[in-house]
Length: 456
Image (cartoon, rainbow, N blue to C red; front, side):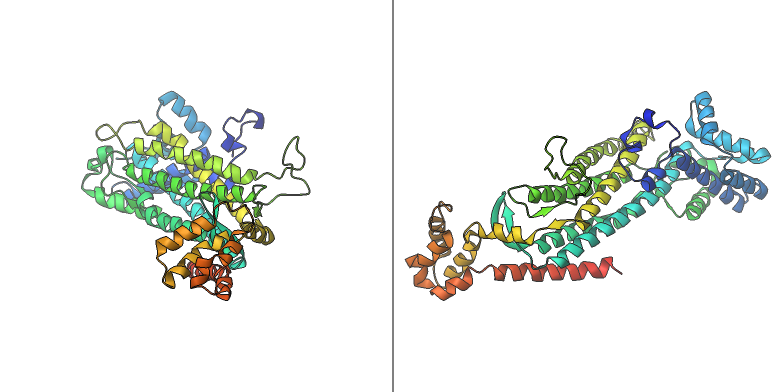
């Protein structure tokens, strides 16, 4: 993809981050081919409408597909002309022979660049959709496997009532499923081009302008921006940027969750680690650090930061200026490549996650039954005690939870509690099974719904 010597590469996306299928979409070669595809579609549509000779359109389209228009030649022309699209048009005209006089006929630069960008974005969104599908399925697999695996729920970093690890995974699956729904909704708003000339009115194409635009977009599998200026309106790109920021935030949320659960003092899960070869620390040989989860979190912060620039680009002077042009060449490929990268890394983490049910059970037990205080309060209220009184009683009983005896034994021995509840009832109320069963049942409902959608 890059003909520069490896040691001279500058951008980390070229050698460290991103997957080749996504990076390739934004390579100079592929971007040039997209622009030529648009020029070819324009010529073919104009010939279909009788606006240029049929043989000229065929020659232009053949030249656009021939490989004769090269990155090297267009770059050489751009250095001379100081205009990137004019360099492409002139290079295509050279390759088209006598038909070259009809290349780019009636079009303006952004008719080509924005429509080519729409083609790139359509392909990129298809890859991102595949990423989300794979991620949801990975979460669903963990949710099914651990639907009944007890785990402490946690709020404010403190153990709360019991849940199951499967429910945690099902919640994540539903979150990323919503992102795929959003992607499906925004794709028709993002994959739009234009073929309406300077300032967007189509005047240069004459009365055939609507037919030209419709024909070009039909050939390319796109729709047209119904109300462009000289460029496709940038609220569309801003929406994509904000969608990627949402995805990145969800990815960081789960990467952070896994990192926290892998902490030595919690130890309930661990991200995949190649025990045979992987090194955790250059000095502490025993370390098994959650480096991929940390990498996901790091990249997610950058993707969110990239969302700001497309919103700035919505502000144009009159019917257009160039303030969006340079930064979009940097922001869009980087944001998309990194979103793809962090999603595929998260798929690997979730699919290969080491889950430790024994440690989860140990952590549940370490609080001495504190996690079931809510259940006791509800039972006392149901038996006639004022809820606020029950809450205050249990708050008092469970003060200093580390002091003996364990909180659950204090609850059993309390005279007020025993006034309302028999010892065997207390034993049943403080069992976490009801909470675990509720979490498992809800997990099943989420999994069943999402499997019907994602496995068809």
